[in-house]
Amino acid sequence: GWPLMAGAFKVVELIFAAQYRNLSGPTSPFLKESVVTDFYGYAQVLTYDFRDKVRAGDVDWHIGAIDHFTQKGVTTRGGEEIGADVVIYGTGFSKNYDLFDDATKQKLNVESDGLYLYRNTVHTAIPNLAFVGSEIATIMNITTYGLQAWWLAKLWAGEVPYNRKEAEEEVEQIKAWKRTWMPDTPARASLILLHQTHFHDRLLKDMGVAHRRRGANVLAELFTAQVSQHYDGIIGKA
Image 1 (cartoon, helix red, strand yellow):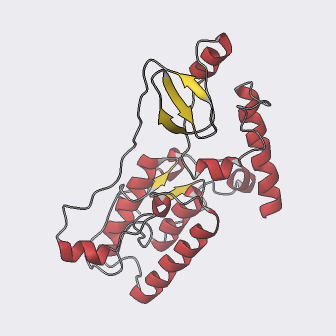
Image 2: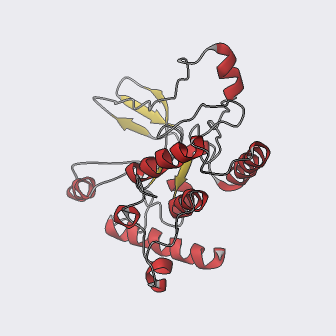
């Protein structure tokens, strides 16, 4: 249940903050932002090299955003002036669907938080159009893409049950659920991340494959992570 998971994630936040020796102070994220919200927002993957450079005084870092540039550097939205010789503007990227004609793009109905698809794969309004790998993000992306592609092959072969109305209703339910708690980003529709095991289970159940990958080891099934090797033997055989 949520109370148990909330406590578990607070422990994760504590471990992260301790690993980076950043438990307190103005630059510490601990108890300022939940790890779940951060992870589903604009998460950054930091290395211990970064931590060690900060500790050695080689890197000075700040939490905030740039308001404007000055002759000597930048001024943050909080009013802090930071000197800088070079500013790297990391713009990220946005998806582009211009390979499709206008009529198809209109049917795609890409929203401000992304493209919502059934099982993050097929569009319910456009028959025989599917996306593998581009509209989903998990922790084990390559494994997910393999299972996703095999699920799609079975769907189009008529071996996976599909009801368009039910699929549309599920897409709307997932959209509404995500919008109740997940940060509003252009990639929100595609984010699975910490829910990847549940997503993989859904694909396996659709294909009639046992989703419990540890056999009789119930404790391992409940309390340890599923990794790529646990899905060995499914693709091409199941």
